[in-house]
Length: 445
Image (cartoon, rainbow, N blue to C red; front, side, top):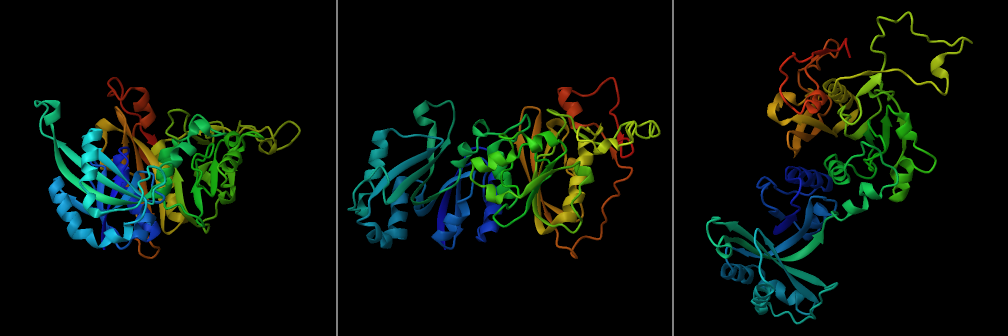
């Protein structure tokens, strides 16, 4: 067993551990991440071998790189002692290899002169190979972590060295592909196209991989470019134009072979057969903010059932005409989430994952807001915070069939829902004063 240091991105901190755990499961790497700290971008782990280190972060978006730890201490002197004790037997292996040294500091910095002094203090390793700043054979890195004592001291005295590590660079992550998939460079996007970085993170957490069938029931313009199949109620977004469509995005990224197809449907009346199995469902359901949340149907269908025309004057069925636009009615977001969990429980393979985004108001959020299903186990709840609201990535795992709980799913008929998120959003999350919250029932949806 060897100790390694993972250098993490200082962004989306609550997602980092969840992503690494998912990648460890996907790559079958045994690792303990329980000591991860959201406030620190340095994570020390113990792995079986260097190959496991490479596999753990090769797909990661929220890790930057990983290093084999050659020594660690709380001062430069204790670091040198640990390096000599741990790795003196490795020095001859790299004696004639080209190399370079780097210095990385967290919550602190050093001048170039100070960095040079630290690097030269490692002269005892006696590397004779050429120093190359570009494309060296090996990169050795000093990673420092500082802590602040008090703001009352002069700026040069505020920081205190907390931890210092010396390691050999092993591998980089895939974080550089964020720019490649940037929405600004994509051929086909829409008003609700999802952020590329978070889409890639969601795909990792959902265990999307070659050979798996991944479904996005709210595909839109195809933000999740890992999807195998997708659907959307808006046929215009699915079809696009002759030159600008979902297929064009896959061709742009040279991953067209991973794409199966898309179809137009109302998710609440999904045409997929109950026996059809999915490895993962990864989606960003419509919140009803940028675009209204609607499903097929008429709000006044019961009242005007006898007056709604189903045939034209010539006797043709109206819904069979190519220019037919089906009526739509508003739908409650919480009801849509319940439908999504019911669908996932029915269609996911055993241990398959559902990753879906859910908005919440910060002031009244509680665990009661998280939808649950007896056949699905909630394994993570990652949050992206804004000023007055948050967006949460909920990840569920399908329990093996035959090993479910004694509970039964709540009947969908007659469900009661409180105020919608969109109503709170457009009210600026201020409390309603002059009216009571509107209750939605399954009958009124």
